Image (cartoon, rainbow, N blue to C red; front, side):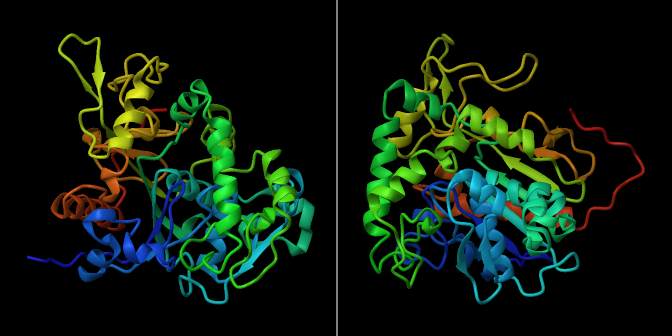
Length: 400
């Protein structure tokens, strides 16, 4: 029985690293949200939900992606911030969106933000800027500053849902460095992006959103710079996903981001690793994608311990790209384990039980339609509870 889902506010899905949005041509062949199991957005729309699938820079930083997401939601010009752009060495303005994704978005017409992988980091950054703003941007631009950087809009977002998100970075970055793959992967990305992003396919088949660095054309325009100059500019910058996923970059993000007291936070960690009876070997037994089996095995090898003493999380658990413990909650922010929840409250993370599966399982990659839709039915049921949540008088103190 296809029962309807009762949600007051729309769902906005934000893809992860190297992902894509609904309006990109590739999504017709393989939807990011649903992958081989079929479109999740269409499934949820059929159950009465209003859904949107955003498109942001697949290789861009959390800051740049948050600015792009805000411009899409509001139908405005992408403003990366005068101070930020000067410091990071790229243009201040990107493309212009003529029509808002969300009509009359406001405190009365809130949204639910759902992010997979680096999409979770992106929506955290957006929520922070909406709530707390960016004082350095106000100082740099004065009256011409983007409304995003003024803050005071935390109540425009009802909830944040982070799925398999590197909330504290990922040891996969260390694995790439250990096997001397960093330069190869970086320049392969530049080459692929720089070539395809200068053709009419940019914005149609895929959308790289790197016009601020001059590496790609703004869709519909021919305004990219010389490939050599653009690569030089982005190569000396730390304004990209690779740095933000590193231990240093993720620490800077967490040092900056403050949790929003008005917003409900939820995290869904996954684990692909099984411990053998001896306890000495950890195998990627819960993966369905051979690539993630390999990366999971590499990550478990000589992995640093991420779990604090006393926490009920195994140190070798990962989903093939993100450490399970990293996907539970930011180390700097309060949380409560879902099994300990007495009532759903804003201002801290609700950490869901660990699910067996890999990084792609959570978005339906090589997973059955039934399992995938059941997972998103559960997410929407939790969000429905959050919408109806009434704060009880009983004090509820999360972990710090």
